[in-house]
Image (tube, rainbow, N blue to C red; front, side, top):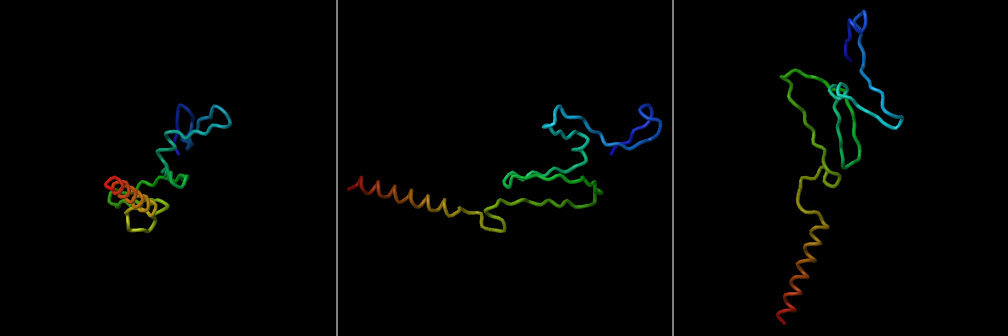
Length: 104
């Protein structure tokens, strides 16, 4: 919320600045709105959320939360997945077969 005063109005009033969209299918979030909001986008799950911005004291520690991918939530192992391991094994087998047939 913002405050306005003279010369726009006689009294000091609170207002929320909005701008009309060009048509009914367009939605616009302005600079003032985005300065007072947290917008969180999670592209892997195809969703986003908007939360009110809270301005803490500088002595407050940050709480940064990492959004993990779908496949490895809670997993501590960051190695290759099963499909990649099978692909590497098949490729290695094919290379060994080609080399051995070339030697014979």
